[in-house]
Image (cartoon, rainbow, N blue to C red; front, side, top):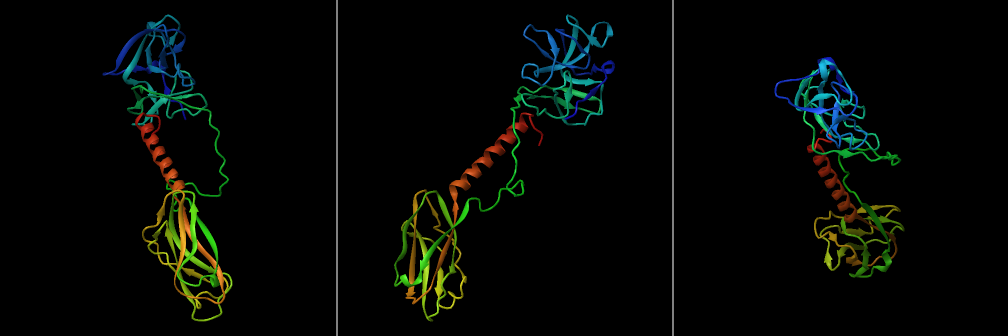
Length: 310
């Protein structure tokens, strides 16, 4: 944040400016921003507090052509419109009440307890257009977060928020027919089934054995996600067998249940492994989406009110 430069001797209203006469309640200089105190007089403004941050305009004259103002002087203040006498302004950008007494700045202050108030905009490199915003925002004392995540911050939320893998150990010898392998396992949160696969622990050595594992949510079969196990693909140790793509009937409410079923079984004589179910915690995903939506709404509102610049 940098304060805007103004030359007091050159500070004057331009055609179209609205000028009001006030009595000075203290000392300041032509070109300073002022606010109205309780008795109707004006004093030098700054953004260090809500009261002093309510700048109403720029002082453009002092008695007898002077630039220094003292208490009880009659002064003219531009409360709306163009004022000349500034230098090196960034054209067509907003300006704000500064924490430096009497100054406008090119950005809102961020110091603790300061306020953010749009004062106007820069019409040209030398002309400031006074147009104070109705609202202001007090800056709370904020401690910066320390990012120890090791992640990379960006503007897009990652796919797969809330995903985890539930691994269920299964002894293939225990699957003797078409039946439930695991029944009504409770998932405590709202969820979606993303994928199924199998990792072999103890390899199968006897040929011509098979079964197909699938899932039900409640009593409804998940569409897709079937894992077809055979003697050939359940060896060697660590062999991965991918399930078919999950395409529908894949969501459950909090405290919903999942059941692992077997079908097309020719009983195994040996072998074991893990059925891996990739699950997305939709409570987590929904909460993150809600927070992102609310943050975006807040950013839009702050931009419209002039607190931030997009």
